[in-house]
Image (cartoon, rainbow, N blue to C red; front, side):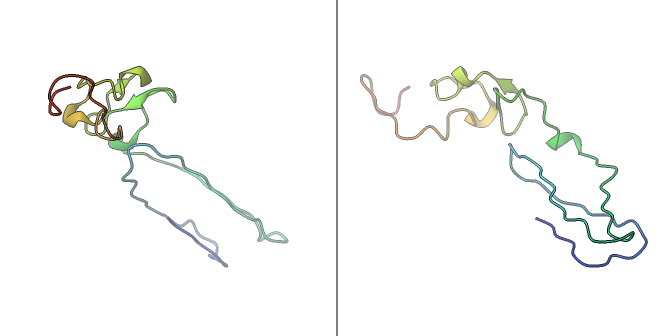
Length: 103
């Protein structure tokens, strides 16, 4: 997403990154240089409320609302999230009875 290389001078730099995924991990990788000017500092992180993780790692996060549901509620043919985000990425459905348009 972002990369800063080389001598950045004797000042703090601000970086802003937009995250559009509903689930994400953030990783910082850095290599310190030699001598007294080879320091690295990361400071003052802020996350806007719409990207703040609110669900536990084992839970599913509904895309539009951020609602947390258990993994057993995903792909269970029940609408637990607004806009059916818990049901849309379930793969091909194999109906055993009823019409193909019914759950």
